[in-house]
Length: 353
Image (cartoon, rainbow, N blue to C red):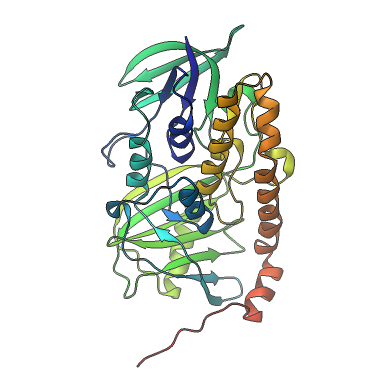
């Protein structure tokens, strides 16, 4: 019998595991392996937003140099194919290797936590005293029981699906491909297309690779992904041969009721709770914040932890709600065109030739 079972050790799960009191008996189940070419790899651009950087400061953590990726770019090229507009906006992201970043956070977890690597949770069942978890580790099945269960397992969270049922939060298919970077100048980009995308796509230069991805409707997602690649060639995108393709579900909360904090001694943190920006798909800062809040709640051992956690995460939900409003503006072709045509915050590129 464990006190706490954590499903997933991304930024949310690793942060929670690191900050829980040692008085708890804790098990963590995680899909990742040390080898980035094996096991589950989540599509992610690997950019740390200013809010994520702020949380690292609050945690008194500094990034090891081997986690940083080249180049560090301070602007985003924003393209609207429908209106044929291109603008450059300043952004202070930190470019990192996402797999190494996750492994680094995982390495900070204290030794008292029992970690099951290369593992996945098959099913969860509520019992009178907590939860029964059936999981597979390196092909071998095991069952454990826990008083509290934590879903830190992303968009397709088995904890959220068990407690709330499926598809409570709107979902898209995130597809991302890696290429050798043959573009003349490294760049980040954010792409809007009224015909193919309901949300946005992105590209990132990283350590000699060019990464292109986007969030697409669940139907014909791969077909639309390829259509957008073809469309972007006239904007100077050079793709070359595909090195690898990654795909997963991604959440895009549309209303305040989409957020799921957990119930009946189950808790959801990070994207599993719907804590992700629907305008930029940035979720690391919310993963950090929600994990920290839950650690404080569980460490205090109050009698109604679910109610307290929901109350304490109100600031996160309100903040993301403002991103929902922002997304409605950005994804409206007319409003987006007016904003981009205005030239507000645009930075003109100087031609030195």
